[in-house]
Length: 164
Image (spheres, rainbow, N blue to C red):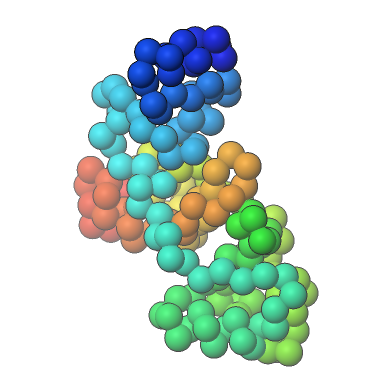
């Protein structure tokens, strides 16, 4: 909608008016509400666990490993101060020498997925590629959460271990 239309709606009393210029996928990637036949389908952003362990580049692996495992996780997401995803620490990286910095041991530039991707598609992809988890980010790379394969599979039409 144009800025002029947005201002006109506000003058008519509407309070939540957005001058949105990007496309539909950007809207969905931001986790904003959608309508239509696919709106009720579970999506990656809906299922992603939001309280995932994170750490910064300058931290020491030993401290991060202890924190991650104390919370029962096998993975941590490396982010900057704006929560932009920079890397991942999976089991192999977490088992490295604890005196090393996160920047030295992390998997840099991990594949990330947008919140609008259907759970069924994520379950299939994660199963085919042997991924236990996948970072879900906004279009500008900010962490939304971590999607676990088990959660994606549980929310597909078949459920269980089967991926349609």
